[in-house]
Length: 60
Image (cartoon, rainbow, N blue to C red; front, top):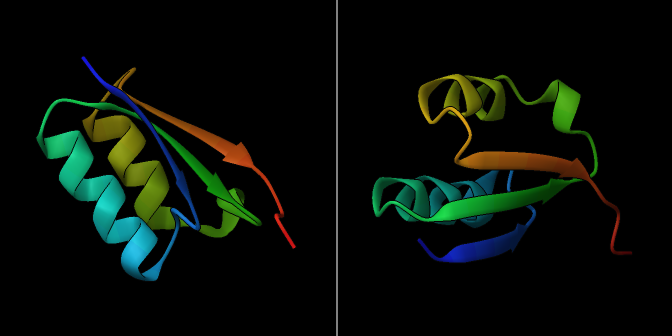
């Protein structure tokens, strides 16, 4: 299992990368400024139990 870090993982291209890596069986560490506001990330965490780790991170 590969470990992948995706910044901006809660929307746009970052979210799409997150989805695709999860589907490929990777463990994904998704960084987002406001992860609690992302219902999609919460749904993906429930769907891919233990495979998606979400962290709050502002890289600005």
